[in-house]
Length: 65
Image 1 (tube, rainbow, N blue to C red):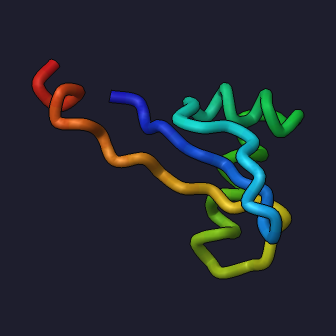
Image 2: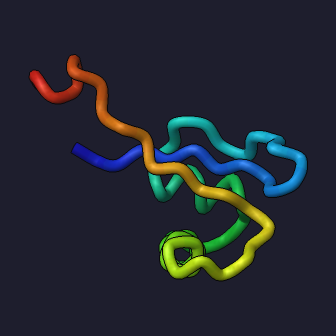
């Protein structure tokens, strides 16, 4: 099961991507997938960024597949 992410602009809470894969989120941000993962690592370390990334919990339906 691939992780899904939601990305928002920090400060305005404007959605950039809702329930997207890492590839889709990276494309919406205009960066490479490796850069998207770097943003995620920086966020986990508490470093300030222009975006906020949320990892989506899988639905029970997704778990039964």
